[in-house]
Image (cartoon, rainbow, N blue to C red; front, side, top):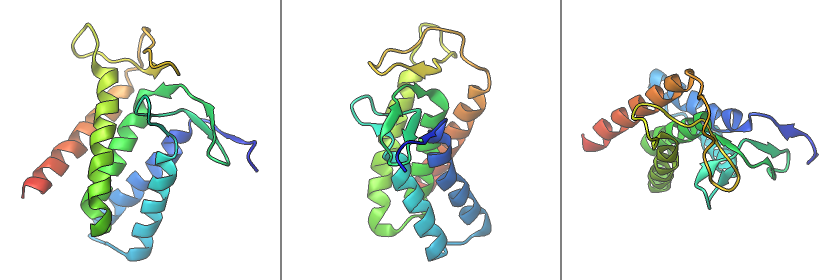
Amino acid sequence: MGTRAWDQGPHRRTGAPVRVGLALRALGRRDADDLAIAERLFEIGVSGVDRERNVAVDELNDDFAVTRPTARLWPQTERLKAALILAQTGVLSKRAVYWREAADAAAGLRKYLETSIPGLWFDKMQPDGTLVDEPAPASSLYHIACAISELREAAGQSAA
């Protein structure tokens, strides 16, 4: 244990609570066991957040030590979606923590969207916080759109 790396780990770490949370919401369920699993998966996911840069890193090992400190755009969207879902469906006593994590995730994601050409985005952040100026994959638009949709839904529910 401790040597195997989780390649593209943020997707597994933050994607899992997103899927569990969406399933709970779609089914209208708030089963305590399912919710506990989603919350634990989220805790594991945020262990991969570099708090100095405020981004989810690309790879951890089995002990959750960072093995690749670069950070892609799409895990930032998964982090945001997971935090928003748990802020709405999680245990009441923990919801403020999830709302704060969602705000942090949104701030981290924003860095990738601040480009000299409106409507484009960066895909990769280096360990020193610089963003790589290279063509970004169009598939990231899907992740950005889903995060925006989740954010809009959460804003509507929190206002209600």
